[in-house]
Each structure stands twice: as structure tokens, then as C-alpha cells.
Length: 394
Image (cartoon, rainbow, N blue to C red; front, side, top):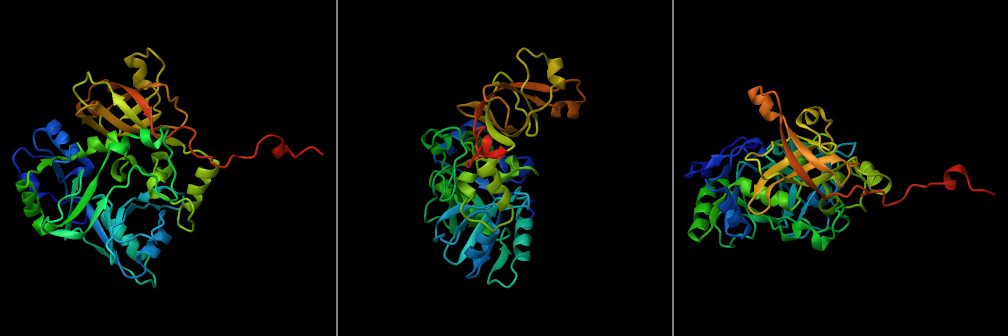
């Protein structure tokens, strides 16, 4: 269970179709993706996220200890407060990005199915002599997602609920977005995770259905997330990703704290440099009846390039998440090189069909980009230039 390989009891529901990739084990949809997405957006549906992992940290040193290990300042986290943190490698690359809330006695961490066991093991290895205890609670608790808080009288609820802070800039954070806070599409995004006793998960969902709630597959939740420009560990984070590229400085990094692994890179890029890549939002050509697969290449070809030229065009980025939004149509998130022209018309090249069917040509999708992380983000302290480098004249 802790490895994220379990399957949900809701997959036995009529019409349920299992998701693939990082969401394997829960329903992608229940037969009507558009209707499910609308119900979820309007706060009338819940999404099965029982494949997510839950790790707890107890003990009087838990918050100060997590602060020393992570990118976030957590020592002042009050019961019921919600945040997120990053655990980085020595080069500042993202290794973990759990959600966190505290109930006054226990810090609850929620993460991806692929990362739960590793998170618990790494935290346990870092205890030393501190008064903390780490437990993988995935066997006992399962996650249910919604766009508004679930009723307080819901049975089998754990003593913790998490509300996504996105896109509010946290204390010590900074926006890397190209839009103002009021213009950010995430302002219309609300996301809540409720922890339920796993053995009573089905009963709790049935209780909600009796009150008028419906079920929405994980594809509905993904479409709303992508439309809100919200990065996700399982999709947007690859082996090279640093926080700045994904606009995670706004919610997951406290720039005034130091002494955590990877902090030097965070400070150097923020103060003196620019992230090498930037997250973009893509409006995909809606005339196609299919969607490109995550991992498809992003191209910035010359105008009028034909399919033969596109087949050999050098990639400038990669698609990370894809969905069909009930209003916006086909949409995606992608990571592209920082120097890609923000005005360039992009093309997505999906070679997965070629690999699967031995067809000669990949499939192409026209894509209009919308800047998320601005190309000039970072370098908040300018580098010395001009005569200063050559020595001042006497």
C-alpha cells in the first residue's frame, strides 16, 4: 500500500475507468468526464485520491526539525495551518514536495504514490537524537479531494485536513509569474484534501453521496489543476527541476531562511541568475480528436514548417501534463527553455503513436503558449557590470 500500488474500491463503481501513469489505482472518470469536471469545479463532487501516500511526524521537535531539513519555515505553523515544503538535493533539484498540515501534536505530510515510502525512509534516516517519530500511515489513511471543504460531520475523518495555499504568495516567498496576483488563473482554484480512515473510505464516500455529492475522476481534478497553472511533483518535476522553473518559490520556499540542503542554488538563482527553464501553459489545437501524451516534445519552428521539417526539428521543451478542460478545451503544461520567445507559436510533437504502431510519422499539435514563469525571473540582485568589473577610473 505504501508504494502507491493499491487499487481503490471506487473502481468497482459502474462506469469507472482506471487512470494510468502516476494516478494508476484510482478512477480516471466514471463515464462522463465533462459532467464530472463541471460538478467538481462547482463544489458538488469529490475525487478519489486514495493512491496518495500519508506520512506523519510526531514529537516536540517535529516542526523545527522539518524546517531545518526543508525549504519552508514551519516553526510557526499553528494547528490547522496548511503549507507545502520542498526537500532538495545538494544541487537544488527537487526530490520531494509534500503538502503539510499540523494538528497540534502531529505533522501530516501528503505526497505522491511514487514518493511516500522514500519520504518516510529519508526522514527516518535524518532523526539523529531529535525528539521525532516518523510513520508511513498510508495503510491507515486515504485521501479524498474536493474544491470546497467537506462537511465537518463526515465519519472516519482523520484529525487533519489540507487546503492548498496556491497561488497565494507565502511569507518569505515570491511570485515568478508574468501576471499580477489578481490576474493569476489560480485565484479561481480551490483544492482541499481530506484524510479518511482507509477501512471506512467507501462508507464515507457513500455518506457524502447521500448528501448530494457526486463522484469525479482524477482527470477532472487534473484539468482544473492545469488550468490553475498548479505544478505537481509527479508530472512537472523531473530529475533536473529546480523550484524557480515551476513558480514554486511563491508557495514552497522561504527565501529568508537558510541552512538546508540545496539552499545555495535557490539563493544563487534567485539573486544572481535565471532558471534555465520555465513553465508555460499551452492552448492546444482543438481540431484533433486526441491529446498528446505527457513527455511529448515542444518545438519552436519557423513559420510554415512542413511535417518533414517538424519531424527533425530540435525540441525546446517537453509537455508535462495534458487535459481536456470543459471550457478551455485541450490544455497542457510544459517546461521550455528560458530563451524561447514568449510570442513564438509552438508545436507539440508526439512520437508515442510512432513507437506504439511503427508508423512513420509522429503526430503534431499546434500550441499557443501563455507565459507562467516569466523569462526574466530571478536576478533580484543585479550582477556588477561595466567599469566596476574593469576597475574604476582614478
